[in-house]
Length: 295
Image (cartoon, rainbow, N blue to C red; front, side, top):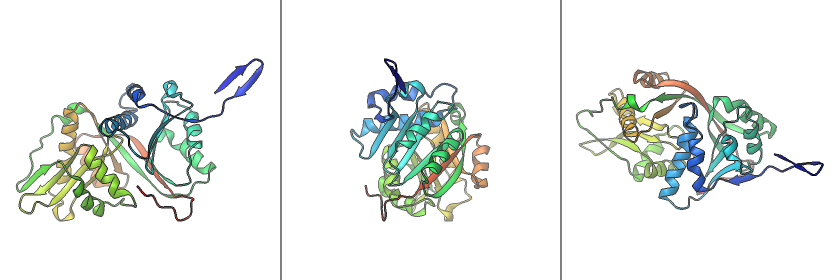
């Protein structure tokens, strides 16, 4: 941002400015146009709007824009504990690079859900800052309109009942989650507490055998079936149930599927989901020696 000051051309230094809670609804609504192109940003902001209504003050949560100018092109970053989300409508991605340059990367981040058109810009910042990428993966981002989800048949098989999960169920989910890490139990338990979810339990033992959560950007996460109960259509049932419940709240449905997971992709496509984008995830290692995240 530059200002003319008399005859001097004065550069104003970039700074991170928090987006006030009362402005989040306007920021969210900027992502409605060209639906579902910016669906992840829309549901991401909505997620934190809903969380902030439930919990007055969320520790370690910051929603920043560049120089207070979010109204121009919806450029924002969200830092939630060690997770980092970002978005912009600025096609050049220049603003995105400027805001990422201002962040303190020394404690590392889980850089979450970078959409395909932001990828080059994000990689350029990582390269310029020589950030240590510990791991990265790509998800095929799938979309289903709510009208389709309302048609799903969600009858559950014999001997199984369905209910919302409770935070105590998080332990088993975390233990079996391939992406478990320091801090992930809290992440899962908080999702269970705050967001829509579903669990399938055996009627006899009351044992949790399949589950699906809804993560911060509105898509399904940690969809899993206990391996002793696989090949009974429970994964598909979890997706249909969650999809219907979201559709009943007039929300569209999204899911990120690991690129190499052909079986899962097939299941979602059979249910009518369309592959609309790819999203990229990176774990940036902390550069502070022996640093560990503590809640």
